[in-house]
Amino acid sequence: MVAASGSVLQMIPAQAAEYAHELVQREKAASAAGRYAPKFFSAHQYETLISLCDTIIPKDERSGGAVEAGAPEFIDLLTSENVEFQVQLGGGLMWLDTFCIDRYAKVYLECAAEQRTEVLDLIAFRKNAKEQPVLQSGVAFFAALRNMTCDGFYTSKIGIADLQYIGNTSVHEFPGCPPVPERA
Image (tube, rainbow, N blue to C red; front, side, top):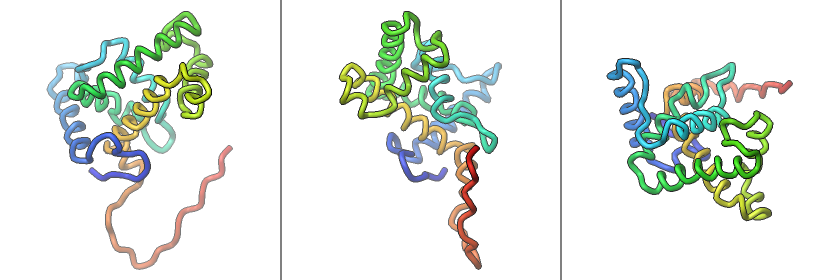
């Protein structure tokens, strides 16, 4: 596996990420249903994790998203083996549901799409934690989850293909970067 720049692999080394993906694939292959069974998160927490990963890196016309790349399984497996991740992510998911209950009288997964977006917009930016101290735990949780989702995605086959990484190859001529597509 290959590491990319940016936030990727801030949480774990590349070899550990590759090994985690291999373990998940082995478990899926050995399972009669071909599914991964969460090791740390409850069923509700795992569904919330899947929803958040899908929001962080959604599927698009170019590639699958974090869910298709196995980021939720990757995160659960690593969290099951690391007490620090258990506190940070398990506690963060509890914080998220509690915040939503206080604000909307329902857990995150039961919130309307607009409510989910509103909450994530609050915890996606560190400046909000400075302005509203009640958000500090949520902001820290979401930053860690975003990093782990990126780690899980960009160390997977889907994520590496999305980068269009071809490795260290020589080229006779460099034609330059492709044009940036126009946004609609």
